[in-house]
Image (cartoon, rainbow, N blue to C red; front, side, top):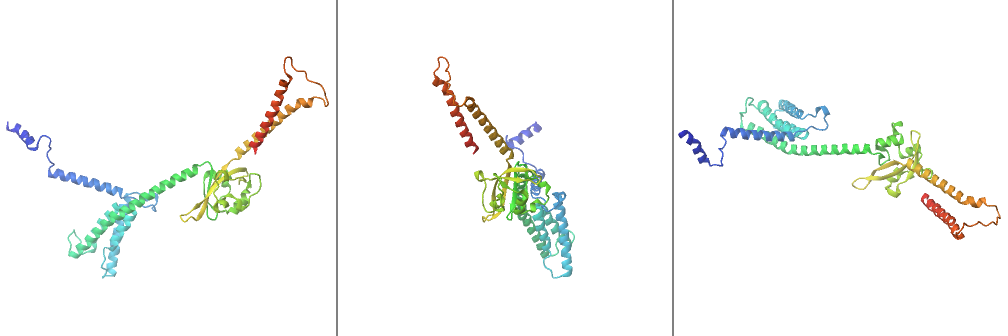
Length: 374
């Protein structure tokens, strides 16, 4: 009876909906586990690699190795300074500088490790007490404490700033890679020039369109040299001067879009003659000054040839129709006074109406086609 009543008494003591509180050892283990998880997440989020390192050396673990090595170097240099300058009163200066260097390049996680390693090396190597964390004097304790506090603050502040800069750099690199992909997949030729007109960037479609693979040093040509090589002409075949070329007009501030976009014939470097539709605009800095130009070249040779073939076919069709209309009149002898016999039970005026209607409709068709050709 007494054994059965003990659980009931315990439940009555804590209430039906309450649980027993954690025992002190269990609570300590739980708190330690949470602290360790938070610290691990913080160190993982605040550990990165600098972009100036080669790709094979950008592993996050190398940041912690670099932190230890730099602190060892800092303590070794401090020993040399103390040996050469006994009056040197800032033995923790190089340690703190290495903490800053690690924080700005590898983040707050390696910087925190550098702080702990630097403090330990100062106590074991620089200051008189070299075994354990017992200090010979209060001054040594203050020095090491200041190094630890300053290093911790640097790890938090500089690491946060460096992490934000690293994230911004990664986003910028991702956007740049996306823009490069879009730039290369455009089906029209895209050119980017500097303020002097030299080509600084062009896509694969531009290389194929103008046969630029034939000349490796194409990007070093000036506008005048490109005009001499490509021999541009307007749509009517008139040669264009250097100042009339679209790049020169863009660099003067003109925007060529829509109806103002010119068409010109050019001779490509691989011997073809193509008709290009050019659109472009100048690029400007924040002060509004022109820093270069961007223009797009589209091959419209096939469209123009199709328009010419259509116009020629329409002209031939109109000529055939006009010949068919004039053929009966030319077949009658000159000066003939014969009168056509009307069909039975048909008004002669009605018989003349189809011929008049045909002549009028052909005249209207010819005028409309000529207007479209213009």
